[in-house]
Length: 358
Length: 172
Image (cartoon, rainbow over all chains, first blue to last red):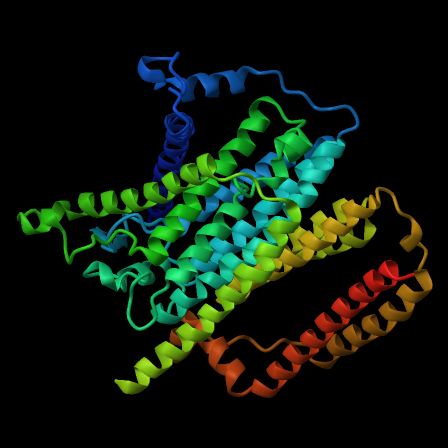
């Protein structure tokens, strides 16, 4: 029983650490997004709170925390309360299977701990997909329970969009799964060690460049970001499914959106760009004679890759105008889906013949 | 421990299954169904079938049930009593099911105790994705292809029905 208790304690510590990292990242992102957008549009971004506005996220958080919590008349109180929670939990729960650093284990007494992953389950990527698909419920129910036509329309649009693009996310990673022969994110990342041409974007025999493009576009659509932010199109729907939300509940939706962005970026980094592997074999710190601290460099590489994807999100937002609804659907079903399917066929054939030739 | 989990999952499944048909608000019914799907996935996990659990969530909870909710909201069925007066149909289906259940219960009084897994089986269970794949594409290849053909036929049928509507509307 003490071993079970110790395991639980270790797991809870890991969960708390990962949740803290994610929340801090989200706080950073809210500031970074406004700053980056500002610079791209030749503005300063937030400048008032603290030097260069770096305390802005805290000001925002405190403001949202103390705002009045309004439930609109005629709203379904129970579902109105449930919806932000249903949006936030799937966004945070996916981080349980993300490998943050090297696949090493610590021996403490009788049992082993893997310090850089909460749970290495053998269906890691499917687990993330399963919970990402649950995230749609928060949006739909939030839209429906608000008893407002803008919210309802936003929720319905979102349902259609998330289902359509979820399919493309799922299909675009099948190529990587064929090449890795595993669904576990730890094993997929381990298989990409060595030089950067072992990463699955470039890997022989079937580079997954098209899959990466499809994945990134679909991930942007799935997280409801510009240019696919139809569920919250300001000019048509006020603020879409969270029009009626205020205060902490609004903050939950906001947090869920950013946590989802971090999650899809982590998955993209782990599946296509080698995760925590450096672009060269081994680590520089390891060559300098400090292999015990190699994990610092590895986790930093993971952070760099993840943040590059996050920067891409901001870049797209500053660059592209919003799509129309029919354009979005046509693009998803008639362009993205065939590319993803063709990629699966080509990858399967290439891997098969590669194995035959060996 | 395993018995405890099974009891919990089975209890919640039975309860939510009743709620799905008993609740008056169709949105609440859909949500009860969502909880049900989660617990069925939990049962799969206790049986070491993680792949099935994930697929259960992706396909049923993530896609099919969202479409149900979509339709319910589009039609705005807040309180619909149309489907609460079909006792005869329900009885017609349920009485044979109950009889079958009783016959089965009477047939083998003691359920066979599941034998502990051998080493070979645990090895197979740890990679059940591959096991499912190989069985689907060797032993059950023909049923698998037939099922996909049936789905394709249903899809083509749906497209033809939808297209015919548009065609008639366009050229009256």
